[in-house]
Amino acid sequence: LLFGGCNEKEAPQKLRVGVTYYDQNDTYLNELIGLFKESLKEIESDKLEVSVTIRDAAGVQKNQNDQVEELIDEGCNILCVNLVDRADPSEIIDLARESEVPIIFFNREPVAEDLRQWEKLYYVGADAKQSGKLQGELAVEMIEENPQIDKNKDGKIQYVVLEGEMGHQDAIIRTENAVNTLKENGIEVEKLSCKIANWNRAQAQNRMEQIIGEYQNKIELVLGNNDDMALGAVDAYKKLNYTSAALPAFMGIDGTEAGLQGVENQELWGTVYNDKEGQAKAMAELAAALFTREGMEDIHFQNEKYVYLPYYKVTAENVSKFTQGNLVSE
Ligand code: BGC
Ligand code: CA
Image (cartoon, rainbow, N blue to C red; front, side, top):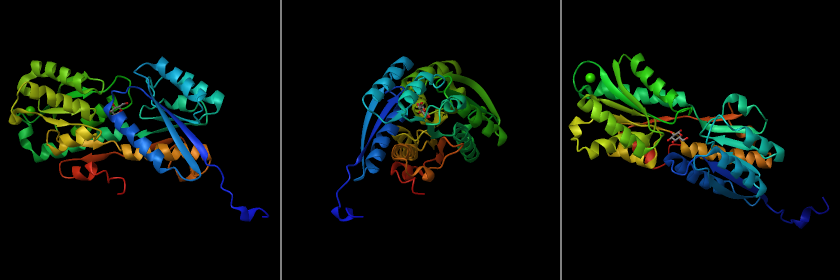
C-alpha cells in the first residue's frame, strides 16, 4: 500500500517459443506457421514480450530431437513440435520434461499413450474423420447436381485416390471417410487406383500420369487427401493437354492459398478448409497460458489435452469468404 503510488512499471515477462516442424517443403505447414507468428504478435502486451525461433527438421526425426535440445538450451520456455515421426516422440518428451518446458504438438498427432507420458503435453489440430466426411459430402452434392461426372453413364463413379504419407493420422482416415460417405449416400463407386504421394504436388502429378497411362478416360473423380495432391493431379492432365470436358472432378482438403485459388478457377470442384487461422490462434493462446499460468480456463480442451478446430466445406459459391480470411469470426 505504501508504495502503491509509485506506479513503477514491472518488466514484461519474456515468452520464448521454439518451433520445429517436419519439413519446410510442406505447403500447409508453411502457411500455418506464418499465421502462428502473426498470432504470437497479437498476444504481445506491455506485460508480455514474445519471441519465436523456427527450425526445419528436413524429414529426419534425429534432427528434430537435436533441435529440441538446442531450443531448450537457447532458453525457449514453450516448445511447439510438429513431429517428423508421430510414433516416436519419447526422446523429445524426456528432454522437455527434464527442463520443465511444456510441449504443444501440432498437426501431426502423437498417439494418445505418448501424450499421457507427462502432464505438460498438449495437441492442437483437427479431426481427420470430419475432413474425410466433409470431402465425401461435397462429392455427393457435386455428383447429384452434375450427372455428366459419370462420363461413361454406367451408374457408377470410377475414382482414384491420392493419399498422404503412410502412418499420418490424416491419410487413410480421410480416404476411408470420404469413400464411405459416398457409399452411405447411395453413390455407387468403383476404385480404380490409390497411390501414396506424401502430400506433395510434384509426386502427385507423377503418380497421376501413371494412373492416366493405365486408365485413360475412365477416371471420373480424383480424391486428394490434400489440395497440393489434387492440384498435382490437375497438373498431370494439363501436361497431357486434356480438354476440360474430358477431365475428372478433382477434390482437395486444406484450403491453402493455391487450393482456394483452384476452387476459384474451378479447377478443383471443392476443398475442405483445415482451419489454420484457428489452429495458429489456439497454439498462441495455449503457449501464453502455459507460460503465464493465466487463462487456461478459456481454452476449449477435449480430454484435457487436445484442442481440435473444425473443418469447413469450400465450393465456388463460398470460396470468397475463405480467401478473405474472415471465416473465424462466424
Ligand atoms: C495437411 C497436409 C499436410 C500435412 C502435414 C495435413 O493435415 O492436410 O496438407 O501436408 O498435414 O503433416
Ligand atoms: Ca462411370
